[in-house]
Each structure stands twice: as structure tokens, then as C-alpha cells.
Image (cartoon, rainbow, N blue to C red):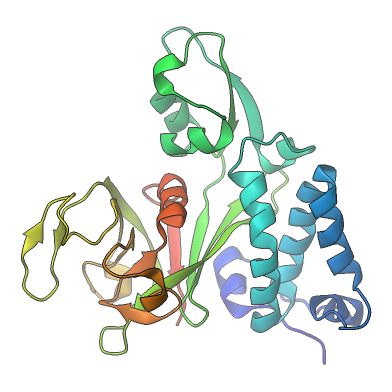
Length: 291
């Protein structure tokens, strides 16, 4: 049977409805006996840095052309390569196709201003530049950065598969998977709402209000479980459901809540993942919460 597009990606990223050729279906589900061409390309990218960027383009294009289960498997397989390409200081061949540039710091120019101009959070500099220290950034210093000034990321929360994905539109106009990580979502009695919304605010080291007792705990208090990050979502497109956002979580060991429905409606993320998302999902970024 020919595999169909993932509906959520059709509606969110605007892909055209197509069917995948039989050869692609075989690649998405490789034989246990014979290594598929696609799996061979994953293996090649593990050995050869020059193959990482082409792999990201190829697999990102494949994901919307297969069914949801196959797309999930491909995205999980691609995530380490996307992390290497989008969140590391490694100079990968062809990284300019992803939107990376070298920026020479001008006299008096601060990292925060550079990040604002290129539409990302300044916290990403440390991922792209080894040993980054904003106190030692002087005129003439060259910084690796991702130029998002003409492109806005899109975030998808797949509640059924407990994943958050981030898609980036690159200079060629193609959408690439930059992040695909496990999350926790709302419990059965307090489900995460569905809908297409957007980021309204981002708070570092936020206070936390207990949803039942309404007691407020400042950042640093043992009872504050937000892990130092809060990404608030517009409540209007979510049926008026307030207090919904994405955040870190320190209230219990990860196995107790990751890839589970356990929250009061928010999306819980592991600390390394919320740190990256916090710097990409700026105010106004579109967020789709799947049914």
C-alpha cells in the first residue's frame, strides 16, 4: 500500500498532498536482511561529516510523505544528526544551506543585539561557538550563527507520540527537521488542549503557581518544578484554556513523566531540550498541538 502524508504536517507546514513511491516505502521500513538505501545513507553520515547536511535535507523531505508511524521512526532516527547540525560548533560541509553564517562582531556590538537581528535567543551562541563567553566578545571576533531573520521556526507538539518537533525553513525554502524530542503531556483528567496557537512570552527563572493550592513558589524554591524555563502559549486559540505552556520539569524523575500523560495540561520537557527550544521559539512562533 502506498504511504500517505502525515496530516499534521500537511496542515502545519503546507506540504502538497502526494503519495510516496514504492521504493520510498521500502526505505522507510528497511528489511531485516538487507540494508535499505536510506539506512545506508544514515550509516554514511555517521562516518562522513560531508553527508550530514544532505541527509537532513533528504530525510526531512521524506517524513511528510510517509504515514505517521514511519514518519515518527524517521524523525527519531534523524534527531541526532539534526542536533549535530543545528546545535553544535562543528563546521559541517554545506552548513550554509541550513542558514548558518559567520558574523564578524563590530565595535560596540553586543551578542544580544546580534541575536535579536537574526531572530534567535542569545543562549544559542554557546551551542554554535565552543567556549563562548559574552564577556570576551570584542570587535573583529567571528561568531557562527543561524540567520533566522527571514524565516520563522514552527513547533509541533505530537501528543499521541509524545514528541515536540521544530521545523525550520532554510534559504532554499525547504522545511528541515531541526529538533525531535520526547515530552510529557497532560494527564487524562487534565489533557493538553489541541489547536494552532503561538508563543506569547518566554520567561527565564519563572515563579510557579501550584495549580491546586495556588501557592506561588519563586525560582530556586524546591517546590518550583518548572526547571527554570517557561514558554507561554496564547490561550484564545486553545478554547480559552489559560496557563498552558512548555517548560522544563524537576518535580519527579524523568521516567515518571516523560512520554506519558501526567501534567496539568502543559508540555513538560527534559532540561537540555527546553533550553534549546527556549532560544528558538521566540514570541510569535507558531505552535501546533495535535488532537
